[in-house]
Image (cartoon, rainbow, N blue to C red; front, top):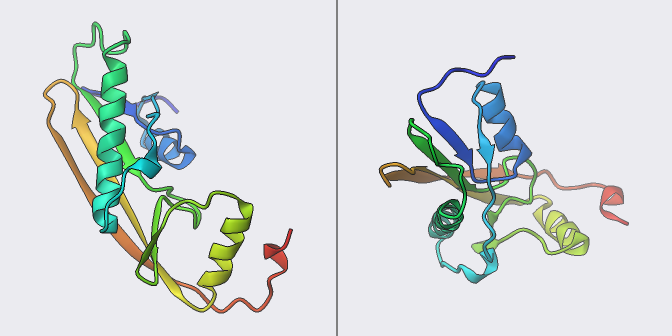
Length: 162
């Protein structure tokens, strides 16, 4: 499938296969750059503020890295940087709100199993954000969204054991 001719360049600020697949299916060419930030050091009380702050921090980190590369040299068209904060597939998204508490990505398999067991018969809200920054003008626009996930009561925990 040939890439679509576009009047802008895209930098995807993520290594997410789901995000790459979305842009590829839309037939856009893009460059991948990831942010090396300490996500655990960014704290906010409200989940929507947290995901927004994380997407912004990723954009700032990538823009700082871009100043030391040749990626933007001799680029005549506008360049858009897309950063986000959520994993588009799976229950281990960047921010999940469960019983009023923000749960971030589990640190290990044991914590992941405990999270899943705790969801049995309950519900959780997934919160994510996207930020698009025009690197030529400096303008950016973003937003957040949440979705509620309802879980059936698990009748077997076989798949949750090691």
